[in-house]
Length: 358
Image (cartoon, rainbow, N blue to C red; front, side, top):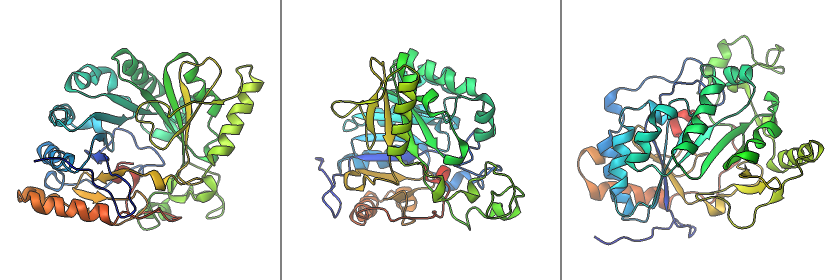
């Protein structure tokens, strides 16, 4: 069977599939999931590695060329290495990437590279050890740094470092950006996105530490209460980093010619003079990149999500398990046909970020 390029109703070519292989994680990052984690799903509710690989093989005939594996934390899944091997064997797939918190990367990097993984994105929101522990609730800064070192040592390329910026956290943006000076890493600052809603995040009603405006308590790390005021527009952040770089004697940020590193996606890239890496900005809220969106998402429980900010989902799990490839492709094509032109301003979604896969 031949391949074709499938476009949505607005002429965008859909070539990129993000797959959440699990909604479990070894961290409990405050902007991603509640402290107690998400409700456990039964084994039967989740797609198997074989089902995921079969879905990828089907949609590769429809134009999918790039795959990103996410979670939760994908490296906590025992099937991640065989899944990568299976996807690598699909001739149409040109690129396989993975988003991770990096904690398990030092001991798994060799197997992942051997299985056919091309590149990694590593989440890192602060270089302050105490703040790192507060943000991740369960993690240690040295784990993430070791993960970055392992990614570079095992030849993943490019290596991207993702930072979600939340105004009330007062993160050291210049310190994070400086990681790009001596290492060939691409530090990307991502505007905080209000994923989850009052019903999903009802735990806030039982928490004593909601920020001022709700209970009058001192600000704490509770995403249940974060709102649009915590979004730091990318232009504002870039100007602040550039000015801080000038003041520190590093120099200001200058635009990167061309599209930036492989798999650059929606980020706009800059760099410090003479730096080995780059500094990118993903402005999902302040400057939508919807007109260039080429992606679809597959959740761990087998639903297709055309837009991160929309709760519209299209279940394919039962069709996959019935062996009905025609039905699977019909659902896939419907999801693409109904992909919205752009996401609306939203105060949340019905799932946590960890349940969607980012």
